[in-house]
Image (cartoon, rainbow, N blue to C red; front, side, top):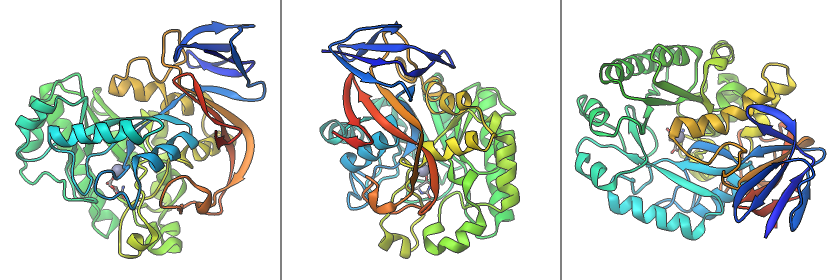
Length: 396
Ligand code: NCD
Ligand code: ZN
């Protein structure tokens, strides 16, 4: 069966152009005008995007499936326009051995409706397991967060930097979360400087997770092989919101002052990609002090606010949620609408207005720090491997 997505405004070669996309056998077989297929989707009023890629999610399986699992988390991804997500290793049962990676891979294959890739956790003593597991990417925790995955030996980071293939990516959690902003930022900046110096010395690529201030981006960009991601909540929420949200407002890195939020907007053009850091917790766990926000279903529409307010180009936003992520993580055939590429396509209705309502979300946690916010731009259709699995704003 072939499928044509007709008359849409498609993101091709970093520009928007009016083109049809034909998918055959799960792959993009042709891009042109007046294309014909067995089935058609009319995208006249819509933007046709490569399936978006989120490099930073916590789908919680195995270990904490009461918070999220591969079925609910991947449905949240699709509803948010993401056809590929990269899952973090800080599960209650951490992903730090070959067996754990294989288990996650199997569970995701069984249950997920989008593609799930995995960052493998590095510890102070799993260097041999890294070699055995041979993962596509790694994550190193240089500071504490949800779970117990943290490097304690200061020599471990560089040992992983040297041991892991240089062309593959190592993602760094550099944030500290001491209560006082000046203290956590000072520590975070020092950690980033140390990591950059070490990576520079051995000429390896690294990727900085969830920058929450402009200065973190500036520090990352002192090294040409360090890429950096920003999560939308640091652009749209501040300590003012944290006060309003109470325990629901806790997240690592912590939300920053209004002034720091503006510094992040200012440095944003230098950021390499957008990541949701989708980190669902139940309301009960939030009441007990859990840190993290769900983000898969709000991130695209939030970034589009940047466009609505005249701060960001649409091309910039979409590139940083698709092709740039693919390039950073070496994901061939994804993140671009091109012949031979995977038939993963997100059709966005840029005019549809909606209000965030946690109870309507696909994520198991069913709340959002953006509750009640009015947004514009909604995922209309998602095609996964050539199959329309989400249509008219709903799962089929
Ligand atoms: C994440 C989680 O809950 O797994 N929490 C968060 O506040 N971002 C962990 C993390 O990304 O640090
Ligand atoms: Zn995270």
